[in-house]
Image (tube, rainbow, N blue to C red; front, side):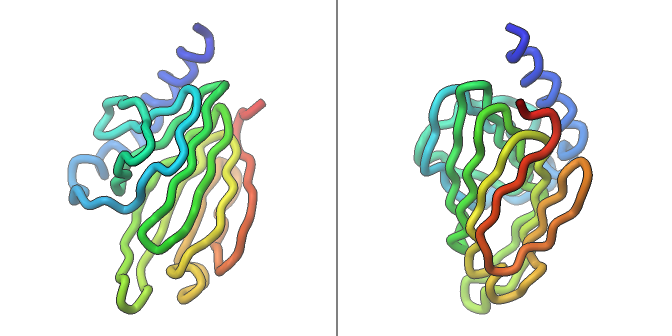
Length: 153
């Protein structure tokens, strides 16, 4: 019960941070859930939905995992993000042109662990992919990496 409350609190805090984006963002699929294990959700416009393989991810969604949760997501530029247990990741901005491979990919890792392999966008335009954590801003350019943020165990 304690962790469920923690997910709800993070969910509410994330909703306050990303909430306005949810109302104005176009409903375009930017990624697809490829792996969903254990407790995992998508927060969309302040509402929590259970995650499942094949579910579309939209700009302004927040991906959440519980103590036994894991998510794997593939974006339209072929970037791959994997989240470990007790994580929260907001998709703040995602714009990608499949012809020129230009755009912006901005996420917020509120807590937990994230491993990633950048796709065409970051390889073509280094620094166009960013991940903000409670303590730092990372600009990514054509690489694989692992980050840990916040109060993850």
